[in-house]
Image 1: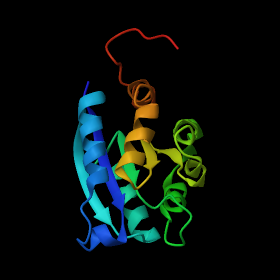
Image 2 (image 1 turned 120 degrees about the vertical axis):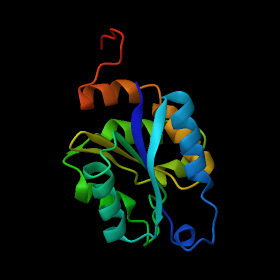
Image 3 (image 1 turned 180 degrees about the horizontal axis):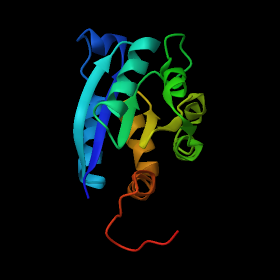
Image 4 (image 1 turned 135 degrees about the vertical axis):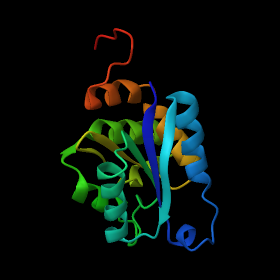
Amino acid sequence: MRWKVAILTASDRGSRGEREDTSAQVIRELVEEEIQGDIIEYRVVPDEMDEIMASLIEMTDYFQADLILTTGGTGLAARDVTPEATLSVIDRSAPGFAEAMRMKSIEKTPRAMLSRAVTGIRGSTLIINLPGSPKGVHESLMAIIDVLPHALSVLTGRELGHSDES
């Protein structure tokens, strides 16, 4: 089964073309290799609440992504508003993913507790905030990657093709 995945990068410098988006490249590689996902939409927006919200809504409602992975804007800086934008558009929270990512990352660095990443559901789309750094993206996504196919199957009502009881 192929999952429809969208990637949203929140970065002022990235949106101005001043920084290469290597974090999104890490997401793309892991999604394609680990969960056989197809990237159906990718965009870079500035750290602006309205633009992040509008992109998340369009990716769920228009592109009908099964999964949206955001990168950037989850720290303590004043312009880090990705969690607030995500909370504004989700219907339900799914905090276990963010908790698992933080727990795994804290094993490597205590600074991981500064992450304000959130995860939730809009319609039948799972939205997961990831850190902005390529290393943080890799560590966080690998902490949850094995659970994503089952979660997406349950959320979308599509069968995985094998009987996995949980």
